[in-house]
Amino acid sequence: MALEQTWRWYGKNDPISLEEIKQTGTTGIVSALHQIPNGEVWTIDDILIHKKIIEEAGLTWSVVESVPVHEDIKKKKGNYNNYIENYKQTIRNLGAAGIYTICYNFMPVLDWSRTDLKHKCKDGSYALIFEPEVFAAFDLFILKRQNAEIEYDNELTKKAYSYLNSMSSFQKDELTNTIIKGLPGSEESFTLNDFKDVLAEYQDIDSDTLKSNLFYFLNEIIPIAEKANVRMAIHPDDPPRSLFGLPRVVSTITDIKEITESINSVSNGITLCTGSFGAGYYNDVVKITKTFANRINFAHLRNVANNKEGFFMEENLFEGNVDIYGVMRELILEEKRRVNTGRTDWQIPLRPDHGHLMLDDILKEKTNPGYSLIGRMKGLAELRGLEIGIEKSLNYE
Image 1 (cartoon, rainbow, N blue to C red):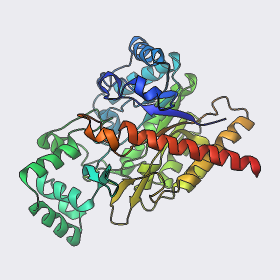
Image 2: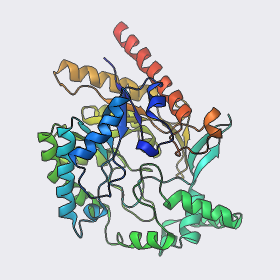
Image 3: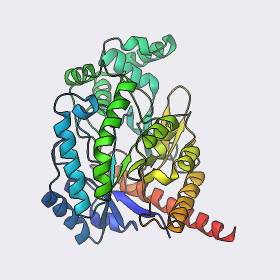
Image 4: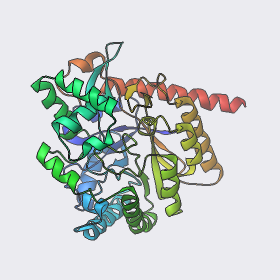
């Protein structure tokens, strides 16, 4: 009995090939049809073509990450009902193709945000990082978002202004590209003016409204997922707090409780992303894992160092603020419970999340931020060893 070891692959445009991925010891692939515009149906033919490519490499398409939720659904405006019907059909088609786990998120506008995609660590590797004063400098003085100043205290505003004055024009452009030009897994990219227009569309949508819209969406899709034997797995907000004044509804243990209780179904589950939850100093990730173990349908494991000011940095697996040992132990215990209660879907797919850019990968012409080959392989090896050690120790208890 073991967690299914998976690896995210971005398709034919991924600089890491399936042949390389196979050598990491991974058996499952986490992938998506990124070429299909948000809101359109993923056809059976398109799904099967992608699945065949993966299987010809000797691997299995285990998890879809992600089927994007159209912004109209999040806002419950425009053609949202049509997009929900398309989403339902995509779920049916994936289930019919034998792909039974779908990761998705409900983050408005941006999937995830960092202020530096290549922060040099003490060991010479590079990590992703979020610095509040840098983000505030962009929001207040580069984007110049309307009413942004009310969201920052005087001290942070002063730090942001000081940081802005230290930046060259090139650095300002680089920061803009880092924050709004799109990251791996994002389906959208924006200019500054486009971005401000998109943000304005959410000015009348608070967290209660967004959560209500999420529940409406879940009530529509979860019955379809149940019939298709598909497990939905909502991804937490990254970071788990408001940015640009946008509401967040998948950030805390209370949010997860409300989401899972809104529909009592295994198909209404979560993606346990230790890095996203861990970016909030207020989140006890082991407690979240233990409390919602039976609804964890997918897991991303990485570590972060964080503080109360909102800073976080993606750390080596055992060097951040998240108790990865405690999380892994709860996942193993949950798999044992599932087997003992007769669940046929007992296995939890797990993937190493963002790895540091290190060794030969530093010299490569192209790598997706956070998705290096060697950094993630290091994370997978550490997770594999941790899992085996915990399994053996449990057998002696």
